[in-house]
Length: 278
Image (cartoon, rainbow, N blue to C red; front, side):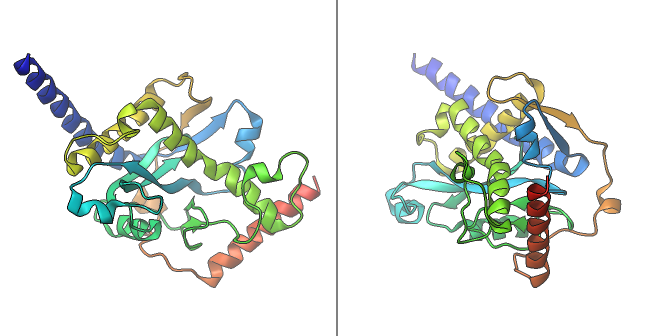
């Protein structure tokens, strides 16, 4: 019985490492070759993205519980008091993970994790002229579109007949509805993989690899099982592009600029005027 258990553990670890290796081969390179367009059966869901041209998806940080040595617990304890790793997840409009960075301690701010992702050699790639949705905890800057602070934000706050009264509120409502894709993505990930809902006894390095492997398998299921009952998004690949020809470099810093703030204001006003004059 002991030998059988040891063999099962060896096979499990072997498969885990194979999954992680496949992630780096397939997951990181696929984004540079093609993107996806999101076509939804529900016209309401599709309308959430129509305002945001050149938006690649959304990113967010989430906490996944881990088990670490006693001496490391203070660094891994997040603001809720839980021992966890702060995981940066970036997903496309069709709920596939584009980039995942686990490993940072739970006490680390989301903004620092994002800066690290941009500085890594094989880190997050944000081409100039494109952007991701972020929440108000991040800086609103080139490549990262944040909502207006001090305004109603969540989609539910404007439900039940409560319509936006300003272009900032209207922008925030639509921003929230579209950015929700990353929260749904993490929700599906946790529901699908029980190992992510409680800390395991693996070393922390292996626990981080498990997170990566689960994200890879999530993408595989999304691509190969389009009728999976978790959602109703249908994938349709766009034409392949040459990154060197289409993009003039990538964003590597997080710095607010007046130009980006003015662009957001212009977009918000355009969206609101089109909505009230519909």
